[in-house]
Length: 76
Image 1: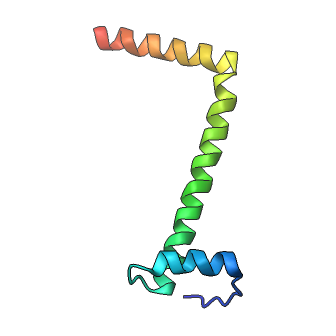
Image 2 (image 1 turned 30 degrees about the vertical axis):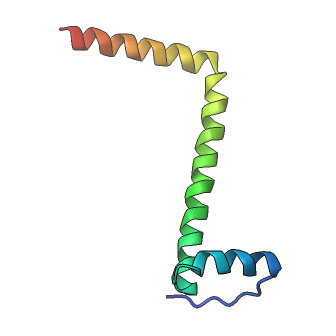
């Protein structure tokens, strides 16, 4: 387990105070904030990729063809 020290500023002090106001420990709040940050970053990346694909005519045509094929298989 790694121990990390960092300097806070006024904004991060306020954020940390908010995250620990319910009795959550500082360490637990920081660990959760890191996990939440990674999750948010991944969601933003997926959102960006999806927005690029929605404009990709070839990808949309391939998706439609696969869906049509799956419908054919389901109908059997």
